[in-house]
Image 1 (cartoon, helix red, strand yellow):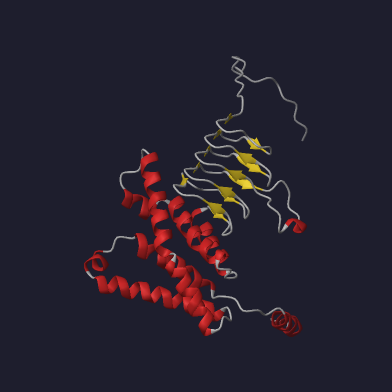
Image 2: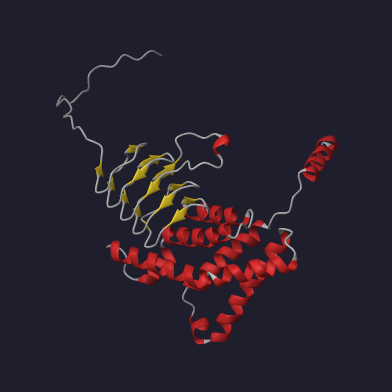
Length: 277
């Protein structure tokens, strides 16, 4: 049975805290729709230029409608939409560079279409680049909805405000976290489970650089954790798997854990263990 007092309080609290926000499903649909328009092969579209133009204009209208939901006036909504789509050719070319970097690097990749259709790291990177442009335009909330949608689909969590250079490669992808003030150069490769994060979390640091800088041509292997706004990983460095880095690394460095192998006792039974039940 419902509690009327609780529902009344809930309604009042929601009313007090109300602010304009975009429809979540519409935002997710827009991000995925733009990705598929740019990268999903469709023979009907390829054979019909009018169809391609129609779908592109449909996406422009979708963004315009989302901005109206955010309480933008009609004129600003139109300007923001135009400004965003003016950048799409540049975003597209950068993503082509990303995809070719994956193709050149990954021996398992059989063709560029495979990367477009099935690589979660590329999908996450593409939605991040779209969201980042919206972040630059200072569109509220929508950039986060788009990157969090990519996060839910791929396990790759890239904040929309992070700065990432060209020829960016994510291999496997699952469990990657790239914090909001991270800066990444060109030709960087990141494997699964990598965290580019803050040393600690405090609301007072909201406007500070809390996440690391990764310079050009750095490879970061699985499970590595790199923390801190003052931490810089120098160009052409290799960060090994499962390492923990909180200080800057000079260029051309190799950082790795020293493994120690111990032979177990050859006895068929382990040493006795006392259990207390």
